[in-house]
Every structure is written in structure tokens, then in C-alpha cells.
Amino acid sequence: MALMASKINLLSCFASTNPKNPPAFLISKFHKTAASSLHANTAKRSLSTFVYSPVSSLLKQFDHKASIENLQKINIKKVKNILVSHRDDPFESLEMINALQGLGIDLHYQYEIDQTLHMIYKQGTQFCGRDLREIALCFRLLRQEGHYIQESIFENILDKKGKFKDDPKNDVKSLIELYEASQLGIEGEETLDGLKEFTFNRLNELCSGRESHQEREIMSSLVQPCHKNLRRLRSKRFISMIKIAGLEDKEWLQSLLRLAEIDSIMLKSLIQEELSQTFIWWRELGLEKELKKARNQPLKWYTWSMEILQDPTLTDQRLDLTKPISLVYIIDDIFDVYGELEELIIFTQVVERWDHKGLERLPRYMKVCFEALDMITMEISMKIWKSHGWNPTDSLRKSWASLCKAFLVEAKWFNSGYLPNTEEYMKNGVVSSGVHLVMLHVYFLLGEELTREKVQLIESNPSIVSSAATILRLWDDLGSAKDENQDGIDGSYVECYLNEHKGSTIDEARTHVIKKISKAWKCLNRECLNPRQFSKSFSKACLNIARTVPLMYSYDDDQQLPKSLM
Image 1 (spheres, rainbow, N blue to C red):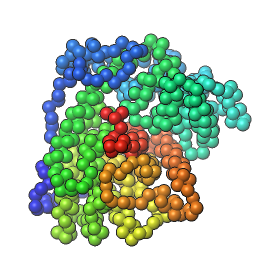
Image 2 (image 1 turned 90 degrees about the horizontal axis):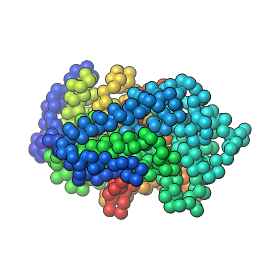
Image 3 (image 1 turned 30 degrees about the vertical axis):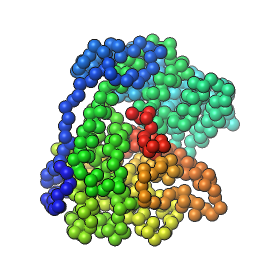
Image 4 (image 1 turned 60 degrees about the vertical axis):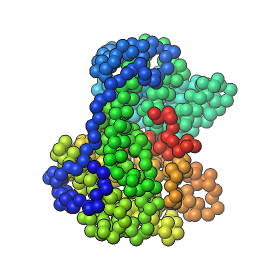
């Protein structure tokens, strides 16, 4: 329903916010679109074909989605049998798990992967590798799945001075894997810090004088290490890394590549369907007509949801998450571009009270925006209540109030010309990033561990969320994004740092920001290790939002997201 009515719907004022009671009503839904038939012969192949027999020719005979899904099931079972048959060889199992994750098809085998890695973790360091690459691979895969394997695993390959006993010299695949492993470090791990510095410098040196393909792959690892990269971008890179990693002769590789291609075709079809529903919802919501200067980017908003919640079965959750994400951007534009300070104060009070009082003193676009906010919050609350028996209305409303108060603080700073110190700026900036609000919605939409204690913890903006928010805020402030044709201006951490540290250069400030981002990643890494405070799926969602940040704040000259995403 379009938000064009002249009167504000007051029914939601009386909705229950008790976690044990259902919300009062449901207002709107995404319009369902018919599942489109998938014509595989017109789909682009996303995988290279020089190392395996492509399935695209086989797929041409299938005209229906059900047929392709059946082909997918056959290949999933085939790969599962291969994975189980190699269980007694821990090193081969590690290679297969790495390939499954690299190709983005590991979701089909999470149980088998968990079992294998748990077995290796229980066996201790005796199964952690026979050479530099195997040790580093074992360490990375175990930590990625939450196993707290200690950095002492590397002591056998280093002398007392922290130098390699056997210098890897020009061993590119070992150096890359060691660098990748170092990305999972936490605070206080000096050995991993040393490994990161050494491998980074050595790989940079090796880039000169190398053939173009290998140089490109080295730089790709340095700029976008696997742990901090998105699943779909990792899969494209993994294909090109097969030769460097020495995997082209593995008998099981063709089966994995075949399944990855089928998955890629099906994922593109799923994304198209979900995007279609997103655009229909956004168009019928009507906000773009009321706020013509605000960002109109449903593709971008859906992309956030798609990358945060990557499980293909979570369609409803992705579509629901896109809604509050869109409003974070719209309300941010209201505070940055549209609103006068007095109006913003009243708008914030309305959101805090959530009772519509004061709306009569606000311009129409603010009224319509709050109506949309109220409608979406009640819709999501009702769905969560029906699915999980918990009413999150009060929690969601409080998170919107916190976000608006953080936006208002920044508006007051700008209006008065006040420049805060870095600590004050970051305390507010972590909230105004919108990450806590988004991850609060993710927590409820996943519906796992819904207890009063956990809800209170997630409401407090715990470290696993605030560290991801820190990464987003600082990435944004590095100036990687050209801010999408907005006229509004807000401050940045770099500006605050330069004001606080007189005589410092911009390069010094940016170096300081990069170190803070690295520290935030270490904090996020620690929060994802066992024993964790939250479920594995929620922890991975927090990792995913941090991984998405560099992509979403990197635009081409036409203000478009990188084409490698789509």
C-alpha cells in the first residue's frame, strides 16, 4: 500500500509490545511473484571451463527449474560421498573443505565439515599439517569455524627470534596461505602479527618480475583476503587460484566445480526473483515520491540483506531485512539533507515516544516516513511472533529511537560547527552507522536463542555487533565512497583526528584509521570463537556485514556498485 494517505493510521499506537504477547496486527506484505522458469541455455556461465567439463551444455536440455533442482540434488549427493570417502585423510579433507568454501558450496555440507574439523581439532597439533601451507590452512579452517586453536601451532616453523626455520622464499602458495591465516588473529597474538607483516612484505616483493596472472592473484590476496571477502567474490577468485594452489590434478575437483556452476545458475535465478519482489515493494510503498532528494537504491539495500544472510533458504528473512535497511538510508537523508534542526528534534521525540504526538507540527514527508517506519516495524514484529513466539516490537522501537538520537547528535554538531574528539565521535558513530539496528533485526528474524537474557544482551550493542559497526563507520570515513549525490555534509573521524592531533598529516590520520579497523577485526574474530555468546549463524551474519562494507563503500565513476558483485 502506498503511503499517500493524508491521515496517519493510529491503530499501531495500541499495539502490544510485551515480548510474550503478539503484536496487534499486520499491515503489509511483499507481493509474491510467480517463480520464473529458468532457461539455463541463456544464463551466463560464472566459472572457468579450462580445468573441468562444464555442465552448461548438459543444462540446455532442462527447461524447468524443478529439473535443475533435481540435477543439483544428484551432484550434492555425489560430492557428499566423495567428502565422506576422504574422511580418514585429514589433509585431503582440509583441501576439500577449503575448495567447498572457496567455491561457495559449503552450505550443503555444513554437518560433514563440522564433524571433520571437530575431529581434527580434538586430535590436536599432530594433524595440523606437514608443511607451511598445510599448517596455515589447518589453522585458518579451524578458526573460521570457531575452534580456538592457538597461535602456538606456528612455533614449530619459527625460531626463537620469530623467523622461519626454513625460509619459504618464493613459495607463493605457502606465503599466500600464511597471510590468509594471519587474518584470523585476535588481540595479543604477536606471532600472527609478525606472520602478517612478513608475508605481506614478501608477497609484495614477489609481485615484481612475476607473470601477470600470478601477480594479479597475489595482489588479490593482499587486498581481499578470504576471511574478509564475500562468498561470491571468493568463489570467482578461487577458480583463478586453482593452479597456484596446486589443486588442478585433484580427482574430486571436477565434481565440485560442476556443483558450483549449478549453484551459481540457481542463485542468480533466486536473486532475480527476490529483487523483483523488492522493487515492487519499494515502488508501492511510495516514499520515493515524497522524498525526491533521498537515495532511491533498492538494489543496494537488497544487496546488504543478500550478503548478510547468504543461506538460499532465507528468502523471507532477506526480504524483510531489506525494509529496515531502506529506512536507515532514508532517515539518514532526512537528517543530512532535508530536515531543519527544530523539525529533526520533534521527529526524534516522535520516534522515541512512538505515539504520533507532535506529528502535526512536522512537514508531510516526515509524517509519511514515520508511517512507513511504524508499518514496517509492526509487520516484522508480527511475523517474528508467528514464527518464533516472541514479540520484538519494544526492542525494535528502542533501536530506531537510538538511531534517530545518534543522527540528531550529528545534526546538532554540524549546525553548531562543533567538532567532537575522536572518542566522542566514535561512541556516537557506532550507533549512527545503523549496524546495531540492522543486526538486531537479523537476530530476531533468525529466531535463534530468543531468551530474555539474550535479548537484553543484543539490545546492549555487544562487541560482536559494535566491532562490525566500528569497521563500517571507519571505512566510510576513509572516504572510499563518493557520497551518492547528496548535498548534506557530516564530519568524519579523519577530520576529528586531525583537529585533535595538531600537525598530523592526512596520511598519518588514514594510517591510524586503518590500524583501528584492524583492531576492530581482531575483536570481531575473537567474538566468533568458541565459546561464543551468540549462535553460529548470527555470528556469521556479523562477519558478513563487516565483509560487505568495503564493497558497499567502493563505487565506480558512475556511482554504481562494482560489476563483480552481480
